[in-house]
Length: 638
Image 1 (cartoon, rainbow, N blue to C red):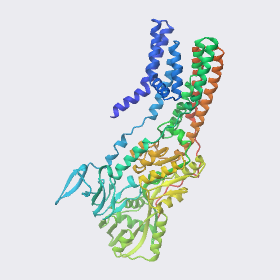
Image 2: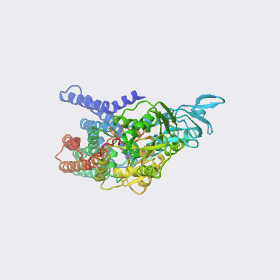
Image 3: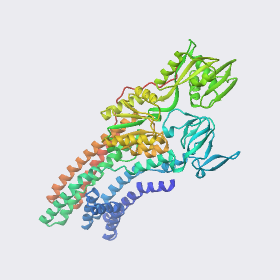
Image 4: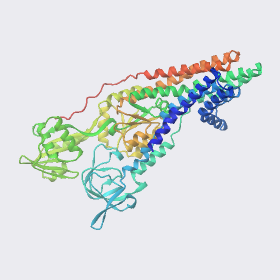
């Protein structure tokens, strides 16, 4: 499938304007050196016009049939009139310019939605079930509601279901956006497509096939894409009244002078070539500028929409944060060194595969601590670990787990745990023997550029209407919002609830931008007026669903994109102003009989060149950042 797509892209980008340009050159050469009969070079120009412009002609006739006055209608009328008086090569030149610009925009606008169709690949094609005393593998299509499936460590959950046996940690960030793995026990809910990390569980299927949460996300994405309405081109709006005026003027001149070529010259000099390229050339330059800054914009419509964004919603995990747990604090009890607390925790967690264990080991390594193997080790899935080292029993985990190991806690320790929870952190306790000796606080690491990016967005938008959306709990969401300078947040949201929040803002009259990175963000990204995906960290479906992709995951690029969108809109209006000047002067000269059809084409082409040069300046436009400076990169604390 990929090779044919590449060939089609090449044809759109180079083949059509290349053939049109070649035919024009050959036609001109035959006429210049008087080679062959006249109809040969004229015929080549006619073929070039029809070959390169048949879609525009078709669009013009269709718009006329629908009683709509657009640029296509104007171009069709002018070109038909030009061909009618035998000016084939000028018509071909106009088509060539439009073909080149149109091909470039078509290439930029092209979207590959293959990843959306492949989204369900996250769901395994087979499932393990128990048949009598044996475990057998069956096709996912054979799984029915009520079937008990077995999910082993490292496997993805094949169905939505409820745990009936076993315990594990599950990474369900693709569905809920939760930054930390979620512990699953008997009675816990599982989502299709999520990843089982540590333990073996058995779950009774509650939803299968198209009814699963993952399948519903796909449906929401497709539905949202289908209802996103296009924005009418500025040139089209101008042409609604401009074309009738020019037609009336041309008719008056013809009736006054009786010279059909003078009337045709008026149509040609007023041909909205400059209008037609005023928008796409500015957009193409803006897209190229952003591409050099690692921001990929999938179409010119999104520059217009982004310039109007007055409400921005942003997913937390993977967007404001890195989506990885980080040790933020090590608290020692009874005056013990924090280095010793961290080392004990690292030794106990050394052989654990839990993400929090990896964060603890990473912090110990960062601090240069030696982490020898424990003498003995045992993991309690979803609860904690116990180990023996240097003749001492160590335990690391939640308070309930340590209490089951015979560890007692004072009121002060409970207060310290509560203090960490209020800051949106996960606290794991470290015990030696029957005594709790310290705790380690972990949280998702905030991207270092986030605070500056938020300040820049506030400046560019001219308001503080930025809302953070997350599947995490309110404590975590509140702590992150306070640290990065976001005034509003919504916590505990599932994908459809994020989409509903976007709908609510749009219903209130807002132009909504959405920034996200995960599968769970895809429905909201698709529905938002402008969806912006984190490219390096984002999932394929989020990237393909979004209208803009940040390839280096630098949030400050969003403010630059919004600044550029406003600049592009201003440049489009300036280009149209230039077009009006050229058309006005040309119409005056044409009305006075001072233009031949060829001179009229040259004059209107001068307008096109001016517009192109004006747009080209956008290639070197440099957005300025406004902010508080980069936040310091988080380091594990001891």
